[in-house]
Image (cartoon, rainbow, N blue to C red; front, side):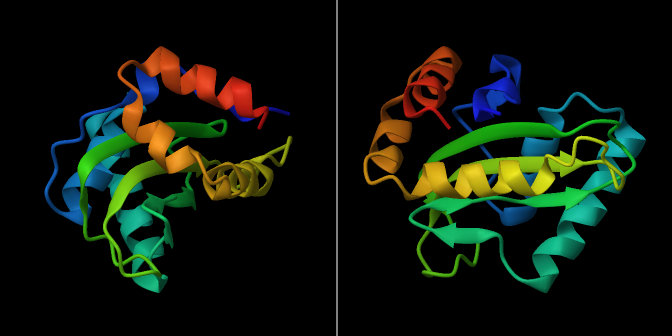
Length: 150
């Protein structure tokens, strides 16, 4: 299983405009192409998850994630905010990179936790934040995932 199998270029946004945690989460949800009702439900679930503790894992990276009935298979999206955003990350630094993961409550292939783990592993590589900042096209994001072999 490789991360790039789960991402698609149309679920990559390199210029997030939101200036608050909630706005960015809503922008990320919009990348999944759900209807308004499901977007609202998913936002509530992700908000609930964030209230338990920030999904900002440090080094400018956040991985908002949850399980929800609004999807019938694992869905992921990537967003970047170059100037960063206070996301209450564990290192108390601004977050630039957002990896959204949403999975159905019951998942036959059970890929939710492995994908979460792979994103965390990918994020820990020393050159990843710098390279994510340099990307200009969604295709370059896909190529970076491929190159890292995650």
